[in-house]
Image (tube, rainbow, N blue to C red):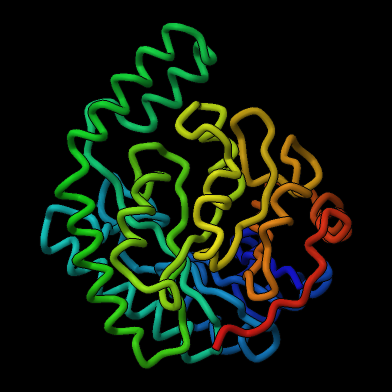
Length: 306
């Protein structure tokens, strides 16, 4: 069973009933609640569809700080202690939502490192130059700066996760740390190793985002997008499945460049699978992606995580 992220449809609906109706008409019986789902929608969605995961922060926040987006408004890695505590408080609310409606995981963004050469700058340079000598020099400088500035941010991640995992101790919810699109965000492929050495596999793991990893490979931030899966195969909580064309992701699976058969080999019976196609995809492409992913090997029925 593959769930559909509500990100595909949520912006078109002002009531939960019509949202549920559209999702069912697309061929899905399960969902991931994304960050745009209002609190007033949650109980009705959960009453009519299986909710497999909740994306932090959910329900939808009423306030997003200037210069931030609804996808990463507050950070558990922040060196601003007030922001870090706010991020923890709001993440706990997402955990409560997931626990109350029977979702097995909360997917969340772990934060970012404040850098001079940001992930956006790196991506822009790649887009402008490809992977030639000019880009290679920028990448080298980026990686050096990232390494030199990581320490206080990763320490705050570990401190925050310790708090959050204590909170989940009596709940049937796992935390999935999503690999991110911008390369200055946490966790990098090496950051995961630091985090996983500190925390038990039963409560915390990798949430593999196919598109983010695929673009990271193109940008030479990782050697191979499958490395996330092979290095941390015993820590996989779930996957966001979407395709990539060039450096643009969140396309319907089967319409881009990704070889999903390779990825399906890493999916276990308890791996939560979410189609995270965005609204730019056509209805036909999204419907076709169901059979496409099944033919690629994503045809198991996930066993609930105890």
